[in-house]
Length: 162
Image (cartoon, rainbow, N blue to C red; front, side, top):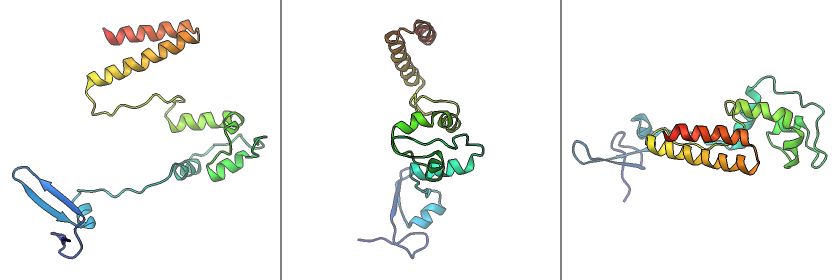
């Protein structure tokens, strides 16, 4: 059974809402009316490739890679700038000097993925997640025999635990 939108009385209802406060009420809206009511927000879906291409076009001064080319796949920096794609894993090493500033700008200075915790998460869960991350970092530092870093991470763990 297909329902007609209760607002415009013209289009087929594709969005079905059940309000329970103050009393139970069902509403059936078409996508256009649901968007006007603020019930849904249309988003444009972009691939990571499209996002990177837009980013490369918007950021002036991304250069310095002229003349660089990967000996393995033949990708040049100009190819990367125009297509937004690298040709092989070796390209990360070849274009490292040019890619790192780009990655830092895109990730607000971060060059290592640390994971994310939603802002709405309970502070105790956020604290425990942070402690788990720090304990992993501590293990890595010890394995790499980087004892200065291990001491800093240990102190950070102690600070969070107290």
